[in-house]
Length: 232
Ligand SMILES: [Mg+2]
Image 1: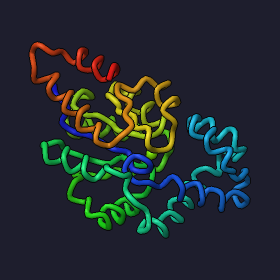
Image 2: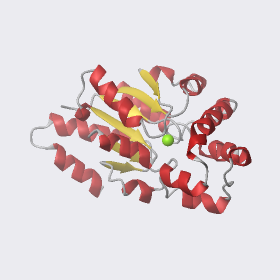
Image 3: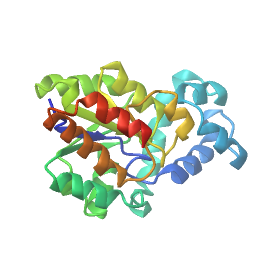
Image 4: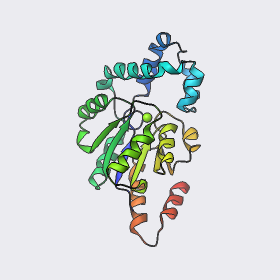
């Protein structure tokens, strides 16, 4: 079965929100009882998973849902001024044109995502937006999506910039494309063993094209195509 649906994470994968999220997190630090991140911390943070960041920040676990709510509310005030990742619009337009169904699964609010897509005239590219309020529950939403649409994990691929995105896909045997232009470093992402690790939005076209042709061509098995991506 070939890939039919490509699901994207939003923050860091489609939208360049890293600086805004850091700025807002720092503004909320004293209120929520954790340390502000100084520039030296940021390089380290990119190598950590969300669980490790939460542990090292010293924030109490029960405050996290409230912090996430505030982050999304404050991001709402800035969302109109944030930009898409450079080159992502062209890549998405091409994927869409080639007949791939595109969707979004985010920990951000659906409203923030819709405002952003409308502002950048990208709303027609996506067939659905799912918002998941818990940090580590993306796999549950992905699983529900498969069941509801009678799809197998092989027919869907998840694209994300964080280690928890790759973890979510792996948990339900879905292939993952890790992108190194967002939050986590390429080293941290590689440690999660995603099927693909890419560094430029236009590489999405090659990877998806390769997956399609691997299934279409009897002489080229999926394994061969995946190995080629690793080597390339
Ligand atoms: Mg992200």
